[in-house]
Length: 500
Image (cartoon, rainbow, N blue to C red; front, side):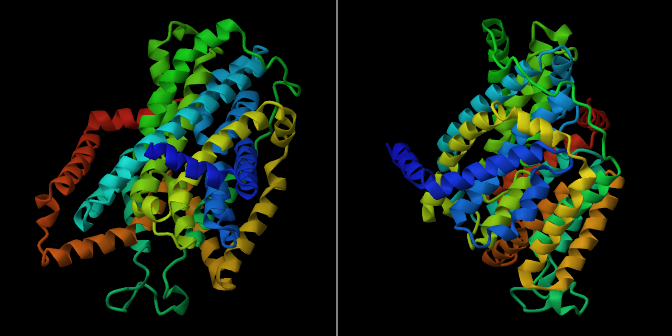
């Protein structure tokens, strides 16, 4: 009965004209940035963070969440029609989706993607409602030692599951932790790593780092690859699936939803890992495995279900533990902090309307997305044809205005440009910026929990292994790093992230 009461509170919060409008805006923008290769939810949410200052917290989070899971829908459109994934999680969808389009089944591929995404999103929302409360209740029993160990595990998992070089991922996490130390030490009042610059006394603003690394950095990188997009067909028809199609996609959708839901909860997991894993699993268990790569409808259904389930269950650790499982969740935590909300298990008890309103809004968002994606396919087709060189001046302007509005300081704009250049260098060196962002967000919290734990234990470092939950999490972190460092497993990991 309690969960029904909570869902009733969430429905009351989400089902208002204002919040429904922001939900619709979020999923519409998310679909648009998913359709347009070169943008993506990370850069878009980073650009829109300053615009959320004046919004109510629940409306801001509903809109930003809609952008994230809406982009998973939109990314499949370009993957199917142009063989150019708008989102990294849609890379796998392009393999069979584009072949279906070339075979004259673009409508069926798009319908499969939309229906699989809606089903997976609905299931993930239910799982979020069921599992978030008990996890939050457990987290309320955590002490500083447990929280520190949990954050160590989260950072290790983000390293293990990051694409590219393991050494690069470790280096980026350490760099993020160091950047989080810039500013004034809360306990001693001493300034750290500010180089006598008063502008850095309060630390580096999270929005500046996010917009520089993912906004400006992406602009520079994408200008090198302003692809010429050739549509398979400019008018899509045949959006209805027949009975045989439904029979073929039921199993893949169910398996993709289950796998995506589980992987989405893991720190560093999320939609991209889920889509790769679901496609690989389906290729092994499907009766039509020989058709994979040639236009198998299962090859569209499984990854689309997985990436949407993974996108929405990634909210579970963010909402209950205050731990970001991927870069977008790190941005969401940044948005909560901007709104004066301390992320963690207390959110559910102190602000139940926000917690449950956000969960219920996801179901409305998934419903809006089905309506947006199929009847409005003509609009998305036209948007695909917009050359990137016409988009980047507007993106650059929004980034500059957004960062300047933080403190009305030119220094912030220059710092954003510096992080943009650094983001581009990281991309050229195949050093994924996501672990750095996670380290930057988690670093200050880790330091605070480390200090509290040592203070309570009279500076005894053994407190982290004497408390059972803390010891288990540290053990898992050490085991994960030890296992992934094995040469054979490291090779398989790199192959998995470069699968085409």
